[in-house]
Image 1: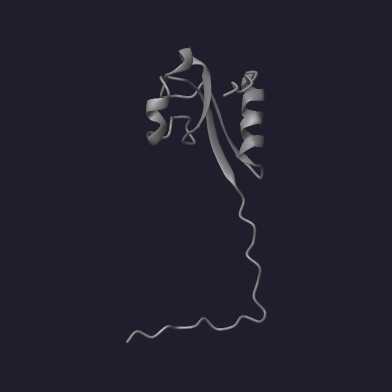
Image 2: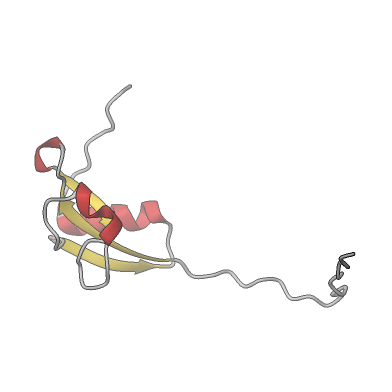
Amino acid sequence: MSSKKKSPKQNGAKKASKKTQHWSLGVFKSSVNGGDPVVCYCKRDGTVAPYLAKRVTTKKASKHGVFSDMSYAEARAQLLKEAGIKEKPAAAK
C-alpha cells in the first residue's frame, strides 16, 4: 500500500513573487524568404541559440540585446526599432 502525504495547511502562506522575465533576442538573416531579417532567441554574446541555427544563415546577430521587465512582444518591437527595421505585415492565409 502506498500512503499519500498531505501537505500542511498554510494559513499565512506568502503569494509567489512575480518573476522578472528576461529576453535575449537578436536580429539574424533568415535562411528562407531571401534573407529577410528574423528575430530569434540568442545567447548574451549575440550568437544564435543552437536549436534555432537552421533557421538563420549567420551565426552572429547583426543587432542583439537583453531586455527585462517587459513582454516578448515589447522586447521584440524595441529590438526592431533599435535596429531600424520596419516590420512587414503578416501575409493573409
